Amino acid sequence: MKITLKQKKLKSGKSSLFIEYYKGSSIDSNGKKIHNRDFEYLKLYLIDNPNGSKQNKENKEVLELANNILSIRQADYIQGKHNLRNNQKNKLLFLEYYNQLKEERYESKGNYDNWDAALKHIERFCPPNYTLGDIDEQFIKDFKKYLSQDATTKSGTPLAQNSKYTYFNKFRASIRQAFNEGYLEKNFINNVKGFDQAESTREYLTHSELQALAKAECKYPVLKNAFIFSCLTGLRWSDINKMTWSEVRDENQGTRIIFRQLKTDGLEYLYISPQARELMGKRTDESGRVFVGLKYGAHFNAQILRWCMNAGITKHITFHSGRHTNAVLLLENGADIYTVSKRLGHKELRTTEIYAKIVDSKMKEAANLIPELKL
Image: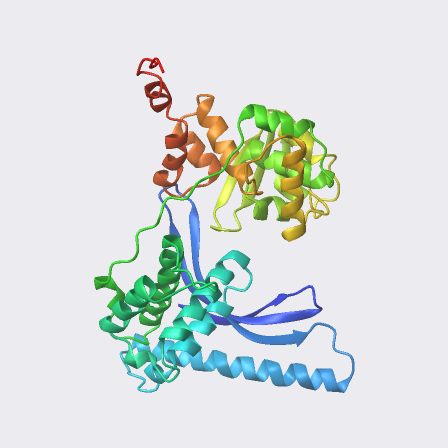
């Protein structure tokens, strides 16, 4: 494994320092080359264009600290590789370790928020002086019991099933990583079953509703174009928001988008319809965003609901409903489930099968098999 110090430029005018753990490359089942990397964000920052001796000195001290941390990580790896036990490693506080893992995910808002929400419950359950060396199977079972019986929301109601599922998975992930990094001699999570995930309602638009929405007025044209684009392509908000013209290929046989999914980091090749291409507008600079001015937040979410009301739609539609709409419309119009799964970028077919339940024609036919009653 190669352990190196790297930096990433931020919009703030600083560069974030992080350690990359490069474990080599492999080939997946589709013949694609995958680079296996882990990252540790140090929460240390360099000033990109230092102004004067004071800022130069600050940069020098920060870089020196980062290199010291790098040396420690490299030494830890060598000790583990040669079975040299570090008696200090498992004395790290569990809450401190979990928080470090949470901060490493700050670039992925949804995942970071889930880790943060889980932390609030872990802090209520776990004693502040509890170390990684204290972890055992009973500790994991006790936390699962806490989520099942004692944990509540801010309003005092019991946690929903999917909240239990999510929080326990983040807790398990932290312990699994502690084992992988050599802090634990045994992977204690193997014998503790997780929570079952509750099946959630996937709100979507019918073709007639989508048509009504296309005709209705929306306060922000870029939001309207981006949402309908999601309905026609199945792309997530995160991938639409970051899309640049360099990812869009206008070819003789049509237009396709070659992009890396923000959620899964998988490389995708997606053909889109002429109408979807039209919603993107005229091509500009290769590095420029396609949907300029698109924003995420409570205000834009509220505008989607107002736009739906203008179209006479009372469903609780979010931007992600565009992805659900695309899957349902494809299946209703004859696309096979394997193709839909590939277009959505799902890693497992069972994820796509949820949409097949929505459009099950036999189930629709069965609803009208019983003759009408005379009431």
